[in-house]
Length: 455
Image (cartoon, rainbow, N blue to C red; front, side, top):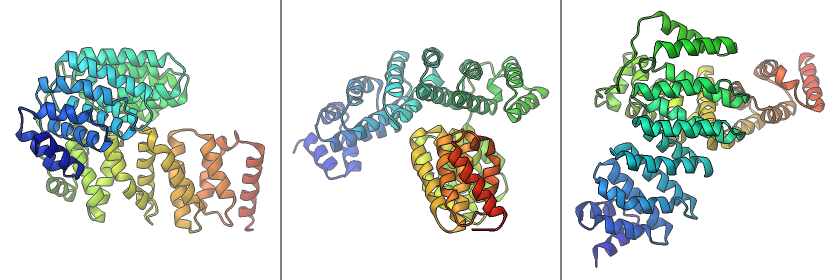
């Protein structure tokens, strides 16, 4: 049996670790094996091989020349008819750009390709591609400026969806970059977008500004003063403006060159010990500056005991904009369970995190909206409260009259409304006024029946 046949046999038998070991040991023939496997028709073989290339990149076992050889195959698979293959190809490219120091010409080429994916492929493929674009833009100023130019062109158009996708890339750059020059240009671009006529786009831009000021050491006083003035003119986001003004009152100095942060090898045990010492703020700052720490927090949230899970939830709720889509999807099942917890803080915090994830990654939105509506249809009051928490969290982030209409339809059918439902209707009374007369009448009648104690 040839080495290639042995490799194929292991992949077909789901023995991916053994297949990886084969190409790790046979360095001389590794690339020819991988390239040949990527030409196979079987999606299982293609996805397995892409996964192996991804692992080699993460372990820094791929050379630059080897990357150059496989890139044409990776690009070809971005148009594969099987979307799961396309998604794995994007993840593989992301691993290459994240864990390898690529020459500028390769970085530029890959960023152009990934930009095309962001703009033209459906969710969640474009969301994964946005992470790769941002990784490249966060490292190299020339690549960053090419990306900023693309974003500006998108913002000149009319497509809300494309604008939000482009701003997702900008946000990821702000989260990841350690280059003050890149941060400064990204921040000022986000400030310019605050003038956009579309409230959804403005909201996305404001989210970028909020993330950037958490990393004030990369920003100049001039840019912060500009942001304060802009927010004052808008008369919005007073809490964000207050935070900027507080920073401006203190003494700080912008970094003049990329900051190389020395990273400690944190473990789950260390993070748990920090929680036990009530060092939650320190964990949060670490999670924002070192993604590996945030991943440890995610692991604790998924598998820890209830107290540890709640410690992790607090950190996640304050770092939701830093979560990558892979980790976002991992925590959703646990968050859904916590939605119906008897503790109000746990319910509301879980709802806010879910709404934040759905806003950051639209591919998650439909499922979470369905979750809210299904909870409202339940008969037990605890589930209804959970549905209201989630609905409130969504509407607090984004005005959506269609969603509000569906929420109200379900509340109107209830024999008895909990006080949280009445508070919800009061909070969104201005939105309700924009709905159809029949809905408004039904809501009014329901409120009247509740007020006089009739079912």
